[in-house]
Length: 210
Image 1 (spheres, one colour):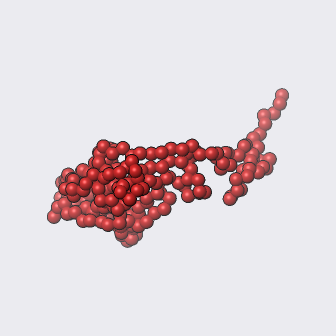
Image 2: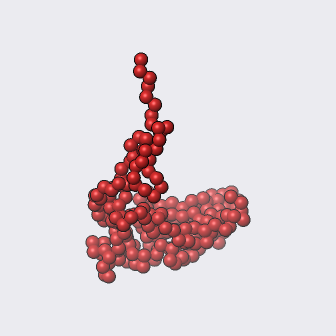
Image 3: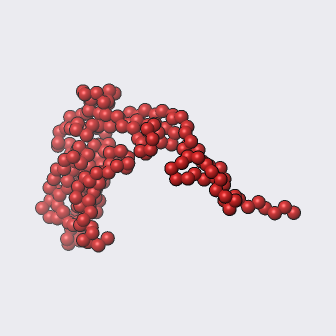
């Protein structure tokens, strides 16, 4: 990508599994999630930097955190594999070619532990429920299931904690015509669930009898 185009890029964020997106921050960033997705840490991916930016409310507010007075090219930001910690490692390369590693701990924010995962959606709970959907229809079903997840409210200033286990509720959905495929030689028209004959050319050739 040309430099002038790279500088026009933005970083986007989705709260519904990629169904809709909003601009989270101007620029291109290297990023990592922590605290079960409740903490996002990013660093500039276009130029050398000495700081990271982070958000605890899914991009509503961003905060600068200065790491060093000597800018360097950030190679990556990582955390433990389950993405549940508030501790990160950022590493990269300085101007002289030497490598550098920084250990970032966000425990110093001293947020309290989130409460109320068992009674999500209530006023006194730090949690809400969200049901996955592909945006089609009103049944909120995907691949024959309706799955409802418990997640921290965007405005709840607290940590989920590494031991947090995300409650989920699964229900089997009734099949609809969209759950079935057309037989060989039949197709669906755009915007229709009805299977219609696609013509003889769509039928498999029969082997010649001898």
